[in-house]
Amino acid sequence: MSDFLLVLGIALFASLLTYLGAPVAERFEVSHNVVSAALQFAAGIITALVAFSLMPPAVRTGPYIGVVVAFFIGGVLFVSLEYVSARLMSSRAGAESGPTSLGLYIGILVDLVIDGVVIGIGSTLTLRTGLLLALGLALSTAPLVFVTTATAKRQGVAKEQRQLLAGFCFVAVLAGAMLGYLVLRNQPLQLRLILAALASGFLITTVIQGMIPEANREGEPGSAGVLYIGGLSMYALMSLVLG
Image 1 (tube, rainbow, N blue to C red):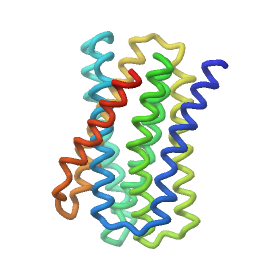
Image 2: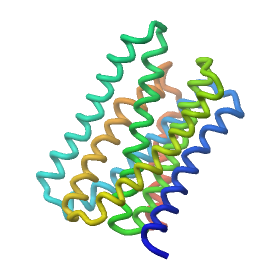
Image 3: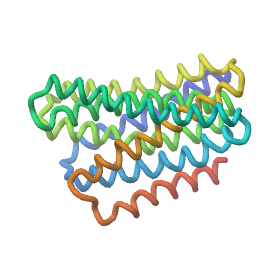
């Protein structure tokens, strides 16, 4: 079997796991505490993914200055995206919850595309790395899709539109992964490592500026730290088993 088909299978696997967050949210009524727990857990996985899989090879093998600058630029990209989307949504929405929720939808879709690209970049290094990133990211993105669907449901968005949004989430991961693999597989290793650092900066800023504040918007739950460390520990265990 060709590497392309294997990567396609990995991308489909990650996309399917990501999508499963939507039917779970459709089936069950969820409170803010459940949404907060899902976000805290996902934040821990993303932090571990950056710390254990993306940044170590970039720092060890890539051009150090280029890696550091790319990491910084990745964080700035997220902050800029959040600022622009908040301004656009606040100018279009009159409801108090509108700008926050629509900005969250946009941010999650963009994050899913970047997560897919990260899977593609990892697959250009080794297929095992791609599989590990796919599994780890799917475990973090499924709660994000769960949060997206639950938020849309709570705000009275039509079921057909919620299903369309869930479909976008599936396609975002799949398209990002295939784009990352097909475009970057023949590129120099140092370029791929710099891009991994840029994605790392974006993801870690997503955790700090987006996911955790959203999880704690109605007050930090007492189990927040445990859930965050639980997600981090789960990815660490996966990287030990599959690494």
